[in-house]
Image (cartoon, rainbow, N blue to C red):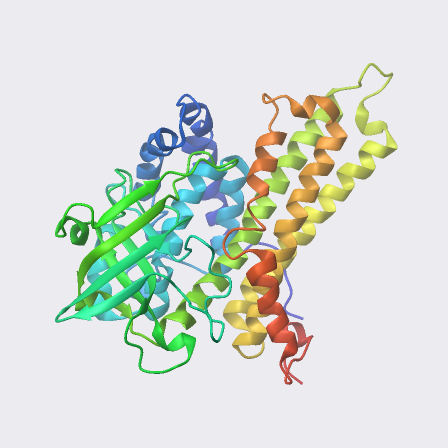
Length: 425
């Protein structure tokens, strides 16, 4: 039976490299960025760390080899994410959000778009990419029949597309200088679709920093920087496009083909949110274990010898191990099967939902174990909880999007509930 959870030599190398980066540049990141009073300065202060990530191949490693990158399997990506998220979520999210921003190019793999990847393959500088999807008011129901759909529109005018609308929560979208990322993959709706289905109008436009500079001032604008409870050194502002013109060749996904790529991109990241969740749970367990072994609360023995404390710790450990196993299985299933694509994506959705929700419970259990000391900001628990609370609600919220996708799968008359494990009947 081909089940073996021992890491391969390649996977072990990935883990060691990730752990090295986490113990090096990432470890002191929070101490550096928390010196700054506001979110924007904190984000910008992580630029040197990001530069080291670029030089170390962490950006090129998120591009598929047939486009010139060094990317590996989705399991390898999950291992990388866990190691880095265990130590520093904020700076890590900026790095991995560039990977999400490049995912549509990985999925479409069109030679005519190869030049857009050049800055990310060079190993130099600090190029940022962003997958620009969410809008004010939400996008959970953007493909519903009879609904208005996306408010961000693109109109073809000669040999240019004219982009208008507002977006929000797209990590890295404004770039380091808040004048626009090096590359934005903007999900929008054409004003002249070729059909009546909601998917017929969905397209993806590529917007570069150079494109923005060729436009009039104000064509791209940050309306508001959002301060968030967790990930306090990331940038996902409210932005606006006003008659922003890009060349016709910047169409990554023509109208009618964009929605499928959006869905596929978020299926990949569903697995990685599972890995993020494991990383946060792991950090909470390590901190709670150290506390339980080193504190007695004025008793005669360490807290770990108390049954209630040991029960809480063992629960966190079991949840973390279960979530890691589900994440790895989901990664393998999405890439290798068995079954058709809907069968393979089910476990990716499950990993995102289950692991993200388990992470908030695990951290709450760690807080209950430690007691009032966990409320001290010198302890990591409040920061971990603020980090974990976004995992169920970003990257496609569990209630509005991910569970609905699972519901759609189960509603199918051909649904086979165990095909993702054993293959179709």
